[in-house]
Image (tube, rainbow, N blue to C red; front, top):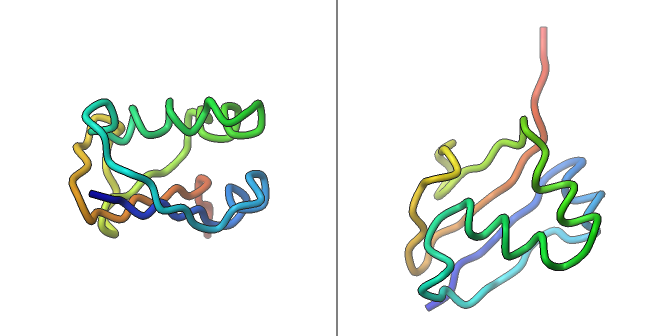
Length: 84
């Protein structure tokens, strides 16, 4: 059972990673758990993924950190967006 994790824009640049494929485990069942797990990869990961305005999506739908993750899901992380 796997999930795909994608990083966009400034997040991708900060982490120097565009995409990961990860094994889905019992402890990795929410977006928040995923962010915590990825944060263990080092300071850049921890700081980038703990930003209070980080946008996260599951299967191209913006979600709260408590959102569940299932086999085959795509989880994406985006920086805050601005416009005018």
